[in-house]
Image (cartoon, rainbow, N blue to C red):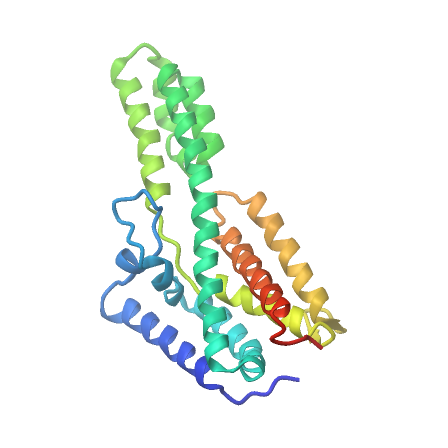
Length: 264
């Protein structure tokens, strides 16, 4: 089904992503400056909305994204042309970052509210509950401290340490960078499903072909589910994926209303 010939923009995106990955891995780190930070972090810069999508955490991360781009991108680029395809890709990636920032702001705002409530009543039980709800790893690492705090609930020293622990947790969460082309790639998947809905795809390990529109719908619902139930150990920005799909849908609907093309 897929034409395996490279198209110009897809080729350029593959080379750029690979170059960023090799430099970041073997020459000097790029994530600290170019990864997308929390918008109110001192490490945030506006250009990160564009640069974050060219960085990846490891080989499997870049491999999945580039395979998806390689498989689905060329058909869309030939259909739209290089300029429109590149615009679409970048808008989906930047849009994914915007959605991620919105969700991240909401989550950190709630976390700050919980921190303020704890500071008003810093008891061992409240500290244990806070760490368990917001940091499973932190809860396990703090187990000895929680036991000692429970034995000395009136100690100003333990109270101060507990407040410092939860403030450190907020700092770690607010400074964690977003990286990866997944938002833009999920936009490509959405576009493929909308533009070529009757195309047949194989979803491993199912032995039967699946219509493209079904494939995209399943991915979207699955990502929404993972985003809502995300645990601390899940470091995938599922809402960024959804953001890429949302911006893809909006762009295609707008283009269709403008009479640029029809799907088939």
